[in-house]
Length: 108
Image (cartoon, rainbow, N blue to C red; front, side, top):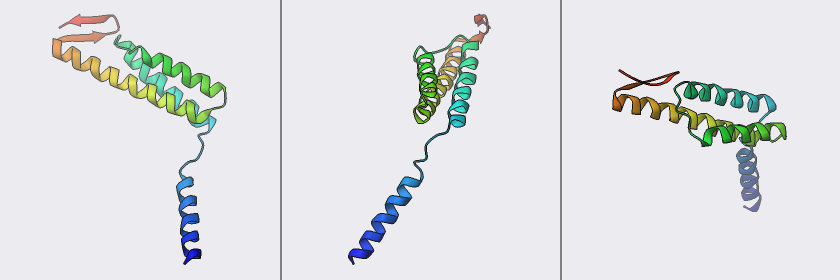
């Protein structure tokens, strides 16, 4: 019985650790590039949240320090914030009957 329990615990520990694979430099760079693309889209309508560039800077610093897991997490967070800011900008523009352009807000 003890052997069975030990075997189950050992196999469970192995399976649990399998999805904890460290991010690579390429994955971190891809996440940073995706965040930059999302931010560029949001910046184009002048609706960037203040926290987003700070997160991207932190992601780039983590990348340079070789902390790829941290870089991926921060870049993905920055990307999500940029996407949410864009959605909010579009929603607010629709609500108030204006258009968001590269030049700023335009009345329709």
